[in-house]
Image (cartoon, rainbow, N blue to C red; front, side, top):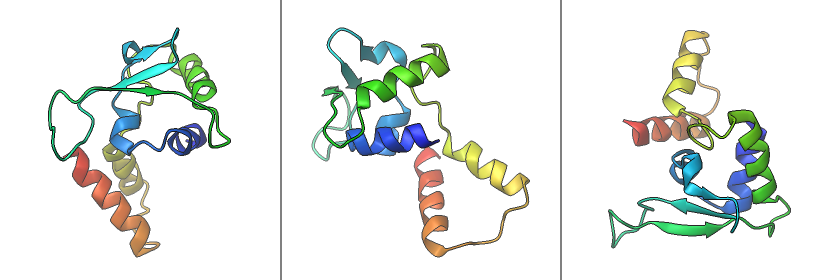
Length: 115
């Protein structure tokens, strides 16, 4: 989980933009990731953008992506994270108690985005 957080800081992308790209969306030669249908208030569909993977925040986005490629074997999604599955595992583990309003609101908004 630490790798996805470092990648989020390095790229300043939204959760959806981090978790949706597949490996074919990544260009090894130019160190660019294509974000398909990137969220924009003016253009809902067809707003594909190329994002350069740089080292500007102290975390090297390209290096993190290479590490992730080894773990996923370059198959499927770059970061196969599913907030709904995380919520189900929390509920099934019996940790239904609310620890703080902020974390629960964040988890619920994440779940809402996936529904």
